[in-house]
Each structure stands twice: as C-alpha cells, then as structure tokens.
Length: 416
Image (cartoon, rainbow, N blue to C red):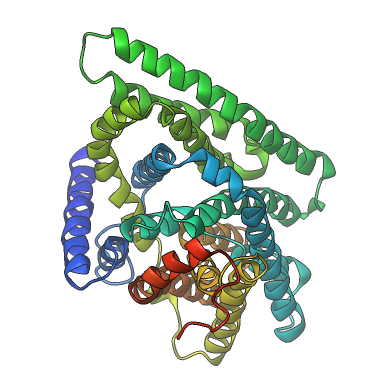
C-alpha cells in the first residue's frame, strides 16, 4: 500500500473514532461503543472502505499496550494483591467453563470433530481486557473493588488463552500436541511473570533518574513509547514463534509487562502525575485506533443470515459464552451486585476471540458457517456488554458502594 493511501486510512480512522465517540457520549453510551461502531461502518461490514491491514494492526497494538500502561499508573498495587485469589477463581472458571461448554455443544450436539470442537471451546475462553478496562474507566469503576478483581482475572485469562492457542495450533498441524513445545510455552510464561515485575521496577527507576537530570523536554514519552516497541518485539521473539508466529504471545505478554511498569512508576505520586500528563495525549491518540480495529475485523457480510444452522449454532454458543463468564463471578465471596458486575465485565471477546476464530479459519479447521457463527458470538459479546454495564452501573453503582462499605454477603435481598 502506498504511503498516501495509508495516511488517508489513518485520517478516516481517527476522525470517525472521534465523531462516533462524541455521538456515543451524547447518547449516554460508553465512548468505546462509538469507536467500535466506527470500525464496523468503515470496515467490510458496511462501507468496506478500509481493511484491517497489518500497519493498522501494529498501531492498534501500541494503543492497547499504552492503555494498559495508563491503567497501571492508576492501580493501587495493594488493592490488586488483595483481590488476587478472587481474580484467580474468576479467571480459572471463566477460562475452563466456556471451554468445556463450547466443546460439549460442538461435539455432542452439533456432531463436530474433536479438533473443531476444541477450537470452538478455545474461542469462547477469550476475554478482551482492552474493552473491559476501557468501559470500566469510562464509568469511573476501574479503581473499585470489582474493577481490581476484573483486572487481575483478565490478565490471567489472556495468558491462559495464549497457552491454549499455542497447543491447539500445534494440534492443528497434524502431529498432535507436542509436550516439549507446550512445556516451552509454559516455561516462558512462568519466567515472564517472575522477571517482568523486577524488570519493570528497574526500568521505572532508570526512567525517573534520567528525567531528573535531563534538560531536554519529552524524555518520558520518548522512553515509554520506545519501551513499548522494544518489549513488543522482545515478547514476540521469545514467545514460541514456531507455534504462533510470535503474534499471540507478543500481543498478550507485551501488554502484561506494561501493567507492572505502570504500577512501579505509580509509587512516586508526583512523578506519576507528571508522567500521566505527558503520556495522556499519546494514549488518547493511539487507543481509539485499537477499538476501531476491532470493528474493522468484524465482517458481518460473510454471514448467511438465512441459515438455520447459523442461528442455532450461534445462539447456543452465545449462551455458553455468557454463562461461562458469569459462573466464575458467582464463585467468589462478593455481594450479588458485585458478582453481576464482574461477570458482565468478563464477557467481551473482542480482538482475542477474533484471533482464535481467524486462526481456525486460515488453518482450514472452521468452515464458513462455523466461522460466521463464531463471528456473530464475538460481535454480540463485544458490542452488547458495554451497554449492559452502562445501564447496570447507572442503576446500582450507589448501592454497590454502600454494600462494599458494609462487606460481602449484605445484599441478600437481591437487586430491588
């Protein structure tokens, strides 16, 4: 693609994201809905003006990494640690329940092969941390107790998805699941979680020190963006590229690094405020590209809306996808309202679900009907939860805060 064409595409993405986000706010909807809808309008689903090109995907990935970095800047590490076990329960249930439900429906109800059924179940395990955190941030709930639980759960859920995707991809190559390659992925992920917080702490000290002695403005945004680009490359190179082409590992693990980096820089509140002020314009520039990209990746024209199989398959998988995420929230000792909020926040599939579905399609595992049905599920679980969360918090936020002060188990009367 020629440079001037790419510039025109980027112009359309940025302007449409802003226009539709403004419209969404005026309609009392989260801004992320407007940005997602901008992608649907510009992409193959409606106008077909812009395709999800690799260059746009790279800019979108920078956007989501910077968004998580901003979340890290605002995260109280003590509250995040306190939510650890609850996040773990939500993540594990939200990963395994949709996997089992999706596999069971595909294998026993629709009579599909084991490999196809595993890929379908794997697609349902996804949670889009980007969409979830953006909606919670728009609603000013990302620092609430349930927001911290969702953040921890979504981080773990994303990494579990990468490991599963690596194993399923190896399985799809025809040689079965290699224990050596699977072990390599698990070893890398484990090492990452040990090293990342230490490296983040060290780098945060270096950035702060150089900012104190530098006489040239702009050191903070230059160093952070450079670090984003470097670590995305590093994670991709080390992330078992023979299994995934490095893409999924780079996507998930590079994001996971910038959360502890933001938390480390948050230790000095004065410096954190300066850093946030300098980074916010860059974050606000790149982040909408990510959400437009999710909309661009949805091609609703590929769906045969008159097919009985499409409706039966997609509706059953939609039920499994939603219930699978709600189950984990109801296994933790929180109020009923908090459980509902956590369950809804874990539902969006977004770009993570699309990665699974696209891999299944290009590998020849999904036919057009299965792929189209999963696209419907991904689209609905991406577009509907932000509206549901907006309505839910608009009605129950005050009651949730009151119950949180009283402690878990105090809302036995329900949500009247």
